[in-house]
Image (cartoon, rainbow, N blue to C red; front, side, top):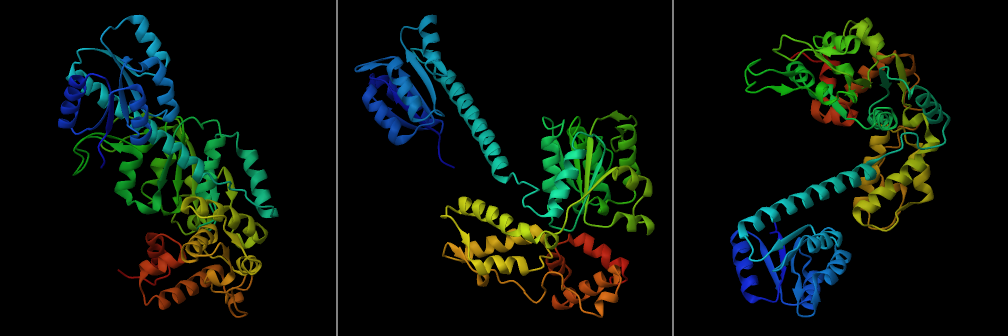
Length: 450
């Protein structure tokens, strides 16, 4: 990691020497200048994190140089140094953009504390700005495109937006359920509060319980301290439970209590805690079927499906694909510093002819791979490496059309596993589902006996 850089602008060599030796001993890089002109030039070239400027210089004073330094880099912190400090002078310096006003002789330990505080503030501002930039960059319109299917979803979503009732987002893997959940939160009444995202598929029962509800010290082996749960973090905001169909049955009644009573209990605690959260849940599974098979509680299903939304798969919104692809390419080009990347005519046809079993996530991955491996700025169909043997609307044979949905699912999984030589991890990646979900499906069909 590079050292923090400090510019010292002072015409007294003894002052510069004392500050330089002290700061270098504490890990700083120090740049020196003995006049306003030299200081401004050093500031322009070296781009310091902090500049310490003597008020009186041979060719000007700090009040003249401060605005010019701020114009060069508004993020740099400025400290004014003077042998004759007054309150009026300090007020003027602060108005001109100085962060601190120090008098000579300098108390070096105090200077060190001030520098560390200014650098920490700068770091926080940078992280905050980066966070806003990332959010803006990653913000995705979940309703991109003119298709009837996505317009219907947009209209339905607008109608449920004012409500605080639970929302269940259903759709195949990769359709953008998480994007829609974040959009709902950002446009709702709780937008100013936290959105807490929990993937139920990635957590076992005990870990999910501890993460959601928190735990008391000593509640179980390894609970060496008290921990607040994500429900507490989401208080007054939104709790997004992704892949809720993978939630362990033992945890489901506790979640139901939270929804019904807005109360919960930490693991190992004896008292209830009040919480105010809005629930958005998402799943790629058919929860109604899971309820009939007793793999999901019916009371929880009816509670979370008050406002159901279905995100259509990409094959049902083929006319949206060129718009989505163009948006992805704009973002990829910006991230990679490439010029505008466009699609050739045959690329448009290829993208719309493909079935997209992985939906929007697969479309983004295919485009990203094509951009990375292609040097030109025009992508053709040959850059995508798509398996065009499975066209839109033609994924099954005449014999397979007579199969039930479960039978067809089992057949497809069997084929993928065979092609991956029984490797469940690779099969799960190709099927675009969590490995735990694939294991559960294999057990349900009697295809896995650990």
